[in-house]
Length: 94
Image 1 (cartoon, rainbow, N blue to C red):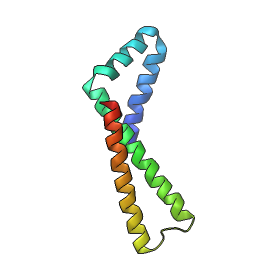
Image 2: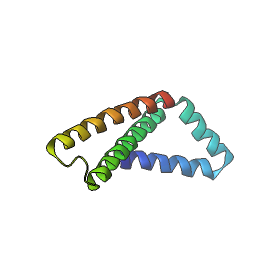
Image 3: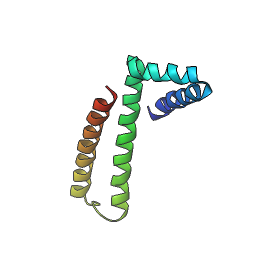
Image 4: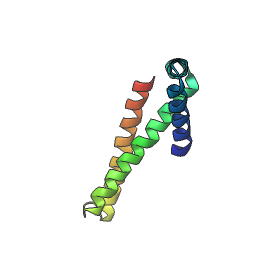
């Protein structure tokens, strides 16, 4: 999902930097296009989860949450924080 979303984002950057008309086209699509907003929301959601899971792994590398109980608690926190980020991204995009 991240790979496909980043392809879309790179395409949008390329078009928006090509000319003032290209910038306006991308801006208009992001403002009113359902599919563009859906892809952007999915990309932000995947990046948010990836960030939270990465921080969890860094914390585990420091020696915290390495037990079974700590790992389960960390996984639950990862899902909860990621869900909050998904909702916040949805509010921002829509």
